[in-house]
Every structure is written in structure tokens, then in C-alpha cells.
Image 1 (cartoon, rainbow, N blue to C red):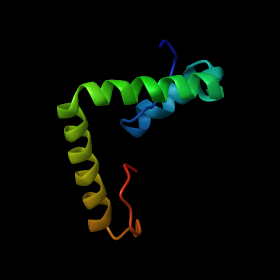
Image 2 (cartoon, rainbow, N blue to C red):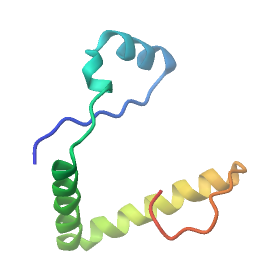
Image 3 (spheres, helix red, strand yellow):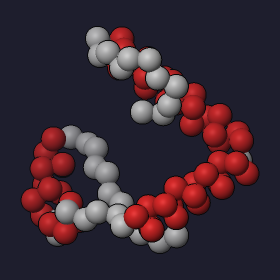
Length: 82
């Protein structure tokens, strides 16, 4: 499935530069339901066929959850990836 998704992380100066110099439509698009559902199903199929990647994903999610809780955030009781 082809599509454009963009997440930006980095130094404040870099994020600010990208925010004000990239096309504004990049930050203003919403995925329609059909494409969203199709992408979710593609990921599910991939994870079912590669259990080692799914296990690694959960390991990373647990690490991030622990890191957030150590900093005093209350995430409540959860059994999902954030």
C-alpha cells in the first residue's frame, strides 16, 4: 500500500524549519477510512507472518511505557501499545 505519512522528531530548530518550509498540505491531511483500514490489515498480516518482529515491537512498547511511567506519568492499566 502506498501513502504518505510523516512523523518528525529532532532538534527544535530542525522541526521548526521543516514545519515552516514544507508544503502545508503534508501537515493537514487525514487518511480516509478505506485506506486506514487497508493499512491496518496490511500491518496485521505482516505481523502474523513475522512473530519475531511482533515480539520485538511489544518489547519496545514496554520499554517506552516504563520510561514514561518512570517520569511520573500515569498511563493507567493498559495492555495495548500506546
